[in-house]
Amino acid sequence: MSIHRPERSLAVVEATRFRRHDPEYHEYVQILVGAAVAEAESQGWTVTRLAADQGTDALLARTEAADAILVMGGEDIQPAVYGGAHVYDGQSRHLPEADAAQVALVLRAIERETPLLGICRGLQILNVALGGTLVQHLGGESAHKNHGVPIGEIMATHPVHLAAGSLVSGLLEGDTIDVQSAHHQAVDVVGTGLIVTGRAPDGTIEALEHESAPVLGVQWHPEDPGAPRGQLAALLSSLDRASARVAVAA
Image (cartoon, rainbow, N blue to C red; front, side, top):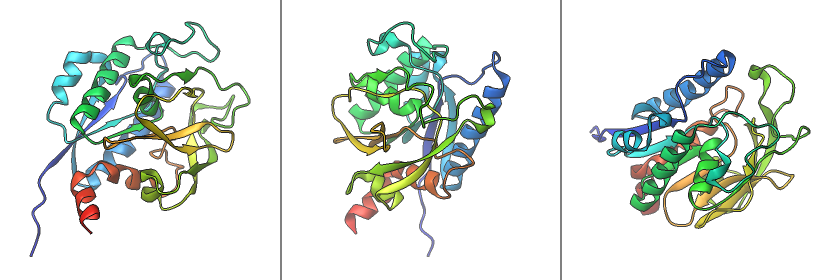
């Protein structure tokens, strides 16, 4: 007997859809977001791809009925959001409307207990939304990205140590994993209600989980073509409330 599974809607939220100022970066982002969308659809999600720079009201309206949310990577968050210096090394362009919209989205998701996964910038948005701060630049020798290379070669491979018994450790079935990352900023002060569940060998925070809401953030890119096979699928499975209920019941 076949089991009918209700349609599930996933909002995939980017900072912006278009980066005409940097065509190579734009094309690389399409690869990453496309991989996430394809994997989500293979898991049975009905995916809507949205841009946060359309404004807070528009983003909240278009995600009102979403069963789950995926916040993707992108540009640096404007320092005013977390009290950082306005000028800093490695600074990228800022998208204030996108920042405000994604912060509002994260806060509503936590209030409603809507499952949410944040990737790279998505983890940082989660942290600053809850009052946390960021390290604005990890330095030119950081192991968290490849420096001085074309955008297609920017991802660096490094290990992450996961907290035993954490959600992310259970999803990825291990306490130490390899990841692909390309970030020059990182979590500094941890936001209220968040728990650190992953760190790189240099101490950089790589995973955060909310203490009560079904919300997870990872600093790395499981959607990158060079990421370990199955990593993206496992992390996306955290968004499936039905699967979570079955696991708890078992």
